[in-house]
Image (cartoon, rainbow, N blue to C red; front, side):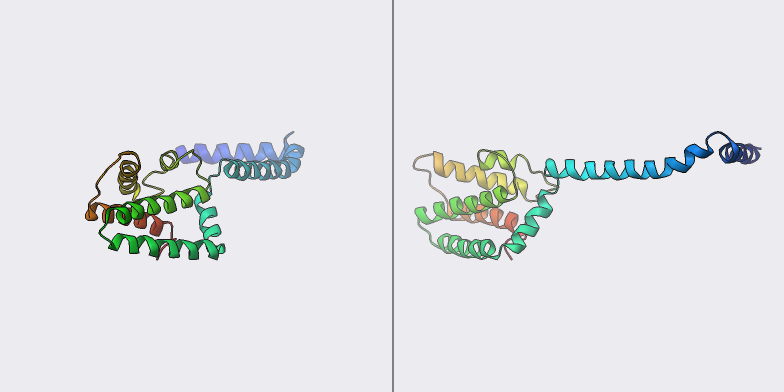
Length: 176
């Protein structure tokens, strides 16, 4: 019964559109609807670009094209790891600070806005950076080093922080 009703309704609509007053309307409506859809698609792409929705893709393309940055990052990372092997306070602190600075530079290249790394990190979540919580802990350690006079860092503390930064840089495919 419902099937017969739907078939009858479909036939009624088809007959109305084929012979009714809307026949001329439908002839020009399809191209107009196509143009409107195209304009809306262009608007969506424009707005996504304006809010920098594709920042992650842009960063990856930029980093692959900019070999000098990746080479410099590799050299900087090697220097960070050398400092980490030292057991003196100055080198351990510098290793953490330099690793933090390198990640901050990457975040800036990704067009994340903010006056400091903390503000840039707030724009990330676990979906964009799986190791975000580890990076926050490492960044807090960096802040303690910089702001607390006489802060004594332990070797394993420094290694954990530097490894957190390394994990983030690997997620961004900057380090191997």
